[in-house]
Length: 329
Image 1 (cartoon, helix red, strand yellow):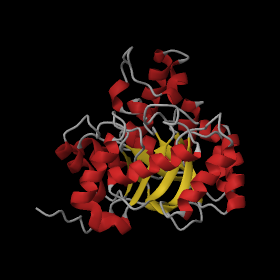
Image 2 (cartoon, rainbow, N blue to C red):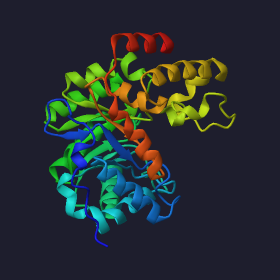
Image 3 (tube, rainbow, N blue to C red):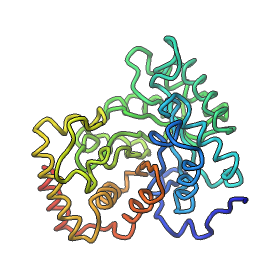
Image 4 (tube, rainbow, N blue to C red):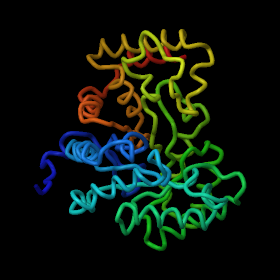
C-alpha cells in the first residue's frame, strides 16, 4: 500500500520561523536519539515516524552516533524516507549532527575538517539524501581551532551538502565565539541545539538565548521532559538506576525527595490547566519565541499523540507563570 500523508497535517501543530531566517520549523521536531535504531523493529519505527509527519511534524532530527549502534538511527530513517517520505522531501527539514564517537580511531569524533566532512558523507549515504537542511557540530571541540570547525561547516554549505549549519551543546560564550566567525564568513548559522527544560534552565541563566537572538539564530531544545522526569510517572519515586542525561545530573544534587516535591507541585499547576505535566512542560518551553523547536522522541504512537496534545493549551496566565517560577526557584 502506497503511503499518502494526511492532507490536514499542517493544521494540527503550530510552526514558527527561526529568528528572521527563511527556515520554518514545527513547534515540535521528532528526534531519533533513542528507541528507533536497531532497538526496534523497522515496522514499528515506520509507524511512529509516519504518524509524526501526519501529525504536523515535518522536522526529523538525527546524529551520526544515534542508534544505539552508531548510524542505525539514520539507517532506520533512511529506509522510511526511501519507502514513504521521499515524495515529500521539499516539505521536510532533516537534520543531523557529528562530533561524538562515530567510528574507531582518533578521527572518529570531535570537529576537525576531515571528521565533519566524512561524518556527513556517511549520514547522507545512510539516509539516501543529497543534502540535509541543518548540519550541527555536536559538541565543543577543545583541541581543534574554532576557525577550522567553522570553516569546515561553511565549506559543507558551499558544497551543497547542507542548507544551514548549527552547533549543539555549546555554551553561550562558545556560541558567541563561533557565531562571530560565521558572520565574517557569511555562513547561514541557524541555531544551537541544547538541553533545555523546566528543571534545567541553563540556556536562560548563561545568556545563550540572548546570544542566539543577537546572531539571528534560534534555540532548538532537546530533553524537554528531562528524560521523563517531567511526566506523571515519577511523582511517587525515582528509581536508583534512573538513566538521567549528563546535562541533567545536577537535578539530583539536593536529593530525589526534594525533586519529587517540585514535580508534584508542577503537576498540580498542570492539572489546574487541564493538562498532563508533560504537556505543560512542552508548552512552557515554547512560550519563548526564541525557542525555534522542541525535540521529542517516541517509541510508540500513543506516547507521541499524548505529548502532542500540548498544543491544545499553550498560553500561560501571569499567575501561572508566577506559580511555576516560584516552584522552580
